[in-house]
Structure formats: C-alpha cells, structure tokens
Length: 252
Image 1 (cartoon, one colour):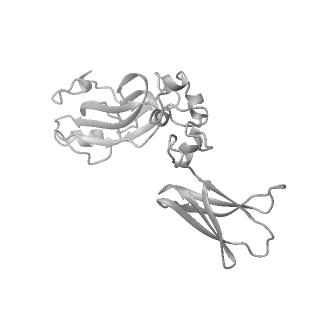
Image 2 (image 1 turned 45 degrees about the horizontal axis):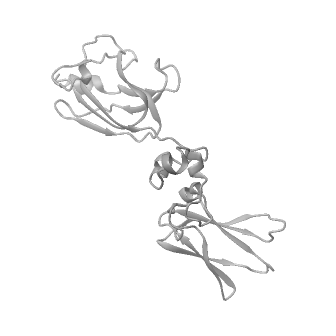
C-alpha cells in the first residue's frame, strides 16, 4: 500500500468517501506512537485530513471492540512535516486502520495521506492476579526457576520476607530483596496520640485502617491518600477513649 512504503511522495489513491486502510500486526500489540505525513497538496491536505480517525480492534472486520485511538485535529502539520502522536491507550490490538471522514456532506476519501508508520510494543500479558509478566521478568528467569509458569512465579516468596511476588508488585517493593517490604517499623505513643511509621515507597499512596478488635473485626479507614515518602512514612492518629486500637497500613 502507498501509505506504508516509506515514500511520502506517493499517497493513497482511493477516491471512495469513508475509505480506509490498515495493518494486521499478526498478534495483539500496544500502539505507542503514530507517525504520519500528509500528501503534498497545498491547503487541501490538512483540510481533508481533519477528523479522520485511527481505529483499533481485535476484530479483523472492525465490527466489535473498536476504539478510536487518535482523531486528526484541525490545523495538523502539512507536508513534508511528520506528525508524531503519542498514544495513551494502554490496551493491545491486532488490527489498526486509518479511516477517512464518513459524515456527509464532509465525507472524504484517504487521498490526503501520504505515509503512516506505527511504533508498537508487545502486548502486556498478566498473571491471574494481575501482575504483568514483564514485571516478573525483571526479577526472575521464569523459564528456568518456575518452568515458564508465571502464576507460580507470582505466588512465590523467593526473598522470604513474607510477601508473595504479586503483593510486592502492588506495594512497589523489590521481590528479591528481603529488606524491601511493606511493614510497620514502629508504633509510638506521643502524648495522647499514636505515631505509626512504616517502610514506604516514594509516590505510592497509603491508607490507615483501624480496628477495635481482632476477635470481631470491624475495620474502618481512618485516613487515605497518604503519599509515600522515600524509605519511611509516618501518620499520627488519636486513640481517644478507646481501650484498644489496632492499626493496619494498606497500599491503595
């Protein structure tokens, strides 16, 4: 196809309004960037390109699961400039297409476009618990250590800190370092208050959950949205007239 030949001096030659062209990646991939160059066509290139869409789907006929991942805006850069668009949609798709405007009276064919290129990455694949395979690959040789079983790797505790890999992923800790773990470092009485200090990861968000009894738990969230600091974070809570209060630190 003329749009994928690397030559911006040739362009889509269809004259059918609402026409489209696309690619089959062979397997689902995450689209990270779209680069395109309009036809050398004076003012008509940007004018006719406006509101054309890049659509993605895992259905080759684009009948189901279709998502618009980019709409060409008015005033897009004209030939020979390359328009580089960062795609924020994190889903993965096998099929991608560019479709001209279909709404009358402004329906247009694709002959405004000269060249299109897609920058993609392998699709994110997840364990049953939702941990990305790529994250586990950063800590383990899954093929050698777990026979290629990512769920087994996800439920392992190779550093012996009491937290399985999937819990370390949520907490933002190092799955192979026993000193990197979400835990309460201290709880100290200061006046009529209690100061809870825990090992934290910068930028993570934490909640303080309280309970008056472990025998008959009725947890409540005392505080949320606490931004983690490097190494340690502290929270000061007031016990009031309670005879006992149990604190738990959770990752949001």
